[in-house]
Amino acid sequence: MAANDVVTVRWALWDERWESRLRIPGTQVGRAVTVLIPNPYVTRSATWVSYAIDRFGGGTSESEVLALNGAAPEPRRP
Image (cartoon, rainbow, N blue to C red; front, side, top):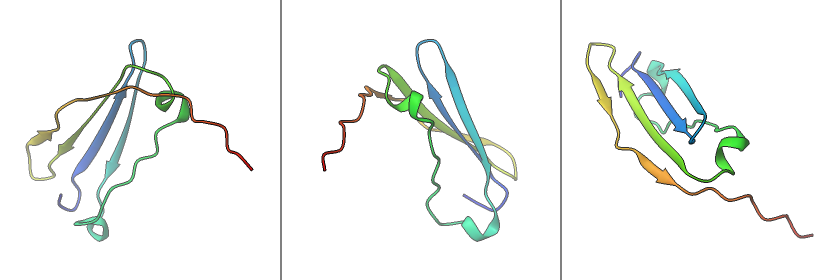
C-alpha cells in the first residue's frame, strides 16, 4: 500500500452486503490494516469476504473471495 490508497473490505451474506472503506494515511504505510466487522455479519453462516485496493496513482488490486462459515460464539464461562 501507499499513502492515499483506498482499501475497501467487502463482507457479503446471501441477502445482505456490508463494506468499509479506509484511506491509507502516510503513517499507516507498511502496517497492518484492522477493520471491525459488525457482529451480525460474523455470526451468520455463508459469508464471503474480499478486499480491493484502489491505488492513488491509478489502478486497482482485488483479492480473491474467501468463503467463511460463521457460528455464534460460545458463552463465556466464569
